[in-house]
Image (cartoon, rainbow over all chains, first blue to last red):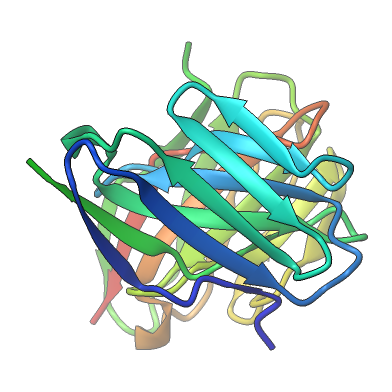
Length: 111
Length: 111
């Protein structure tokens, strides 16, 4: 039973446009959400996070939106750059304080 | 600034062999984790530890063992390697706060 789902395995975007990566979750006990970015042959690196008491968190070109009623979060990257091409994982904390990851979305930003 | 260090980076094992993946962190973090990532899949938690001397099973612990004799080290032991254990393994640590920091990964192939 996947508690965190990223339904789009891949996304292709033109440089300069907006990239929107989506994530859905089923566990209403999740109260903290994170996005990680992963380049090939490297470990995931932390990108941005949001607490369930907020609905938006912004850091430069990256904004995460949280819709608790829909159990949905999204990561917006604007403007997208070729260096943003990577696999993006969303993750959520459950009550046991273990991070649950989605399956990832591969973003390709075309020059 | 080393962070989380994993060794080896790459390893080929024969079916039935055993090996230990090493993980060390220099951030004095209490929480440490081992994840595996299969192609096209998200990260699955194998084992975790909330402090020296304490370990617990994650989502996919079968075929693995861990120990946590010190705060810094969290080795993952594979006994009787099987082809199903071919994967990329990531060690991670977490201090105060919700951000987890990952190592660069260990690519393991069982043939």
